[in-house]
Length: 322
Ligand SMILES: NC(=O)c1ccc[n+]([C@@H]2O[C@H](COP(=O)([O-])OP(=O)(O)OC[C@H]3O[C@@H](n4cnc5c(N)ncnc54)[C@H](OP(=O)(O)O)[C@@H]3O)[C@@H](O)[C@H]2O)c1
Image (cartoon, rainbow, N blue to C red; front, side, top):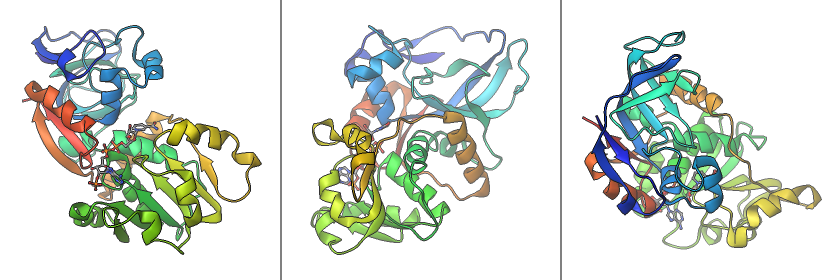
């Protein structure tokens, strides 16, 4: 089989694609033929080993997994002894932010990992593109008391997390104002956003002056609490996927109980099984349609990482293996 391979942290140059024997599933393990996976911003963190603190989770002093990849959609082609939850032929999907080594044609994985069946009628590509962004979006949104009818602003609506957040917010009955660049307004509106704002015309804070939101979710971490505060209701909450200027967001979240007015929350994403259960249910109902940007063959994995790391991808970038 062909697999991505690296033994050190660094830019895409450290990554090669090489031939390896197809692994045998051991007791309690599945052998999955990977059909689609994403190259995402979490993969970039695991390739570069940055922020450095991430190395405590993905391997210190070198990466634990030689293959990159945090998610996959594929078919179970063999099972080891004692496997009870899955059978050969099952279509399955999985995500783990600390790495699965899934940028490979075949993958040996314990059935105790968070793995779910792909609902009938859902393509393997759609399944692969539905996990990383949705996991983070769900974790941010579940830390606020969201109600149907709440006005929510999503900055970075075109990203993997932002586009997933729109789908989850609309499913929860929120009224969504989405910030993106003019060329992507149609794609973001198609996700269900009630209104789109082009941040290239003027900062979204200026364009929305005088309006009030229950929550501001900066899914690309390009704003700050200070800039967004005038847009928040007194009980409003600011969420950001990034640490913020001078790393202030975790600190502001820590002192939130001491603050009057709008607050910051900065959750540590957990509970991947619940995220997978949610996306699989929404995919089955046909109410979750991931935004897919482009596809790269496994042999072009370096180019895929370079593009994803540019911060300009639209939704999700797929890696294909055939
Ligand atoms: N906290 C966590 O646990 C966690 C986990 C994973 C990722 N992250 C971080 O989350 C961030 C988002 O990741 P992602 O994969 O969703 O993003 P992404 O897909 O890389 O987002 C790229 C999109 O963001 C938009 N964008 C770029 N600059 C912008 C700006 N100034 N204002 C508004 N939109 C802008 C661009 O769309 P337009 O052309 O439409 O502007 C671009 O297509 C990354 O910084 C990543 O490191 C955090």
